[in-house]
Length: 253
Image 1 (cartoon, helix red, strand yellow):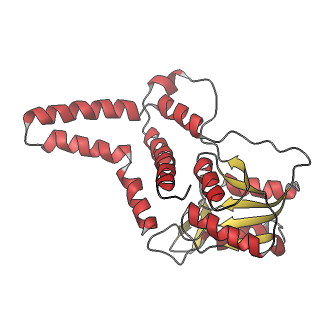
Image 2 (cartoon, rainbow, N blue to C red):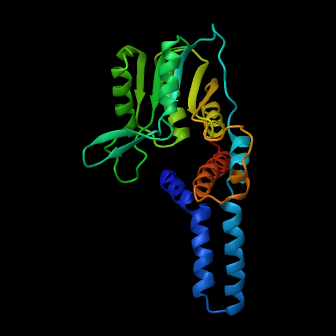
Image 3 (cartoon, rainbow, N blue to C red):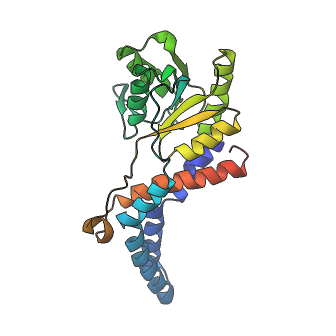
């Protein structure tokens, strides 16, 4: 139920869908004064939420800072949070998504000797198609890159970050793999992940990947030119901010 409600919440907090609502009210409302007010709200909403400079700065502030490991800084395991594979249901094939840097960084860290084992977390992120398990696909890709099977730990039963944390702890405790662990996920997702894993009783060191905002000097276009892609940035940021609040409210962080 929590999983389904979280998916519904992602829809309700999207600024783009609220924009559509405001536009619809300005066009089809019965009261002329309210229609005018909704038209003004729509314009202001559009200007604010399509400004790439605003969402860039907020994303930059929320992201976990880059982590540089010392040459002799090693960990028993690197925990890779899934969520970077999409499945084509017709050919039953997985495809790397935007957050595939999680996979790249885990592979690099293993090859450099910073982590001794790779723990893959993630079941199906779909409400309806539960047969597709990302962890299975990701393990197969690590094997193809030369990682020994005994150094890959796969778990695929849970659906959200907190459930992943709880179940991962059970597995690692049963295997007597000592803490601390290196937690590998997207920089934007790290705050919620780190607090969820900490709540589950795990000592994790954050290793962020997939930085979607970089601290580069702003350009004229990024400050003044609207961009439809900014809506996607808002969806990603609000999902993490509100998700962390919900986790705290429900005792999951």
